[in-house]
Image (cartoon, rainbow, N blue to C red; front, side):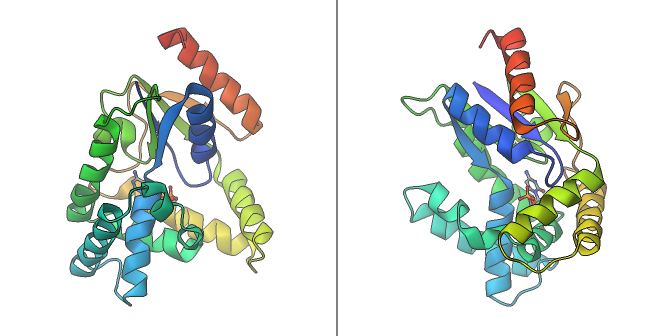
Length: 221
Ligand code: C5P
């Protein structure tokens, strides 16, 4: 079984994906972490994430690291990938189609590999239901209004001791939303057959309940 989850930053898609993975016993891939991983390599090499050659070098480095590590989650779980500088750089290189092609194969491989003991996979990102897994059995599009998302991100960054303001977080998030929705290749949008969940007024438990109720209805899970 394949579940695809898409949505903008801080919409709650990652939390929902992790919780569904736990409840339904699925392997999970946070595909944003691939783009962040690539951006991290570019920034480490003092490159420009908007420059195709620099971005492709970053992809190559990331792929080499992935190939030499048995557990992908060690690389994608690096806490240094979580800051907004890396997120912003990720959204710049994510609009380069050759970069998307390179990272696509990693995501497709992950979605196709059957692993003993698991019921399937769940991937979250921006183009999972539309490009990476258009035949996913269940697709969710998770959204929330920009103010709510900026407040969530501010809280998260402050809890990590970072000195940030609401206005700066809001502006950066709007800039990233614009880039992600307006790019030519694989722009962020809901797949036609995705179920849309707006998380603005719901707790994480309520969002999980809604998603599980839907999964039960369509797949009998
Ligand atoms: O989800 P996250 O905020 O970690 O993603 C970082 C950036 O990576 C996004 O702003 C987006 O530009 C890009 N991305 C993408 N396609 C995906 C996942 C992430 O373009 N499937």
